[in-house]
Image 1 (cartoon, rainbow, N blue to C red):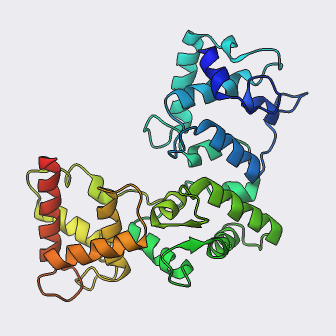
Image 2: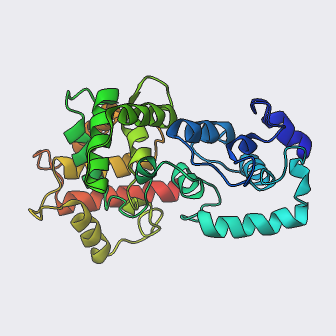
Length: 305
């Protein structure tokens, strides 16, 4: 195991073979408060494949180094025996794997490491968005040039408003630029210098994609109550139709079932296709009958897959 750890940790700033050791106080052995840049370095180091999770061998390497970094620099990761590690990992995941998916995402790591208070606020679990309808409203508000992307300046404005609301005070401009740059490095997976829809969705998650529930995916029967529940989730203004951001939010959830990486153009094309096939009265909106047909098609597709 230790040879695997050594091979995966080459850039350790000459602090032995343990990447985490450099972030501990030499005297107290406590973790020092990490800047946003240092947090990004930790995340990038252990999310070796860049898929947005620390999992599998990445997770084992992180946990072994996190624990053994408490020791002096001449003690390696092998100080943690296999039996100790199994017990440690179980306790660790019970405490920090909030969504119980068996891996650590960036918000879960942010709860574990001591961070600058303002930067930590960006990863709080307290108020996840209720639905993708809210997400699309925020997207429209901050994509001010309508380009279909959240560019650096737009992201900075979003973070400024988010932190002002959380702290009830204005954050320093230099710190805001630092946070913007760090979050772009973390969430801009295709490295084009801006956030597309799927990347922004990772920064600003929705509590649950309702369409992922087993009652819709692969269900042999949909009840009237099922349909009513979904319709109420997206028809936020209760006017009897799913339209505008409501429709975009519904289609975003639907698109996420079949496509991991997507942008605004993908969503527009998907909307055109869905409305062409299911918008029977051609009003550019989705009513309850049309929603029923879409959900039945989703259920059938899941059964056939």
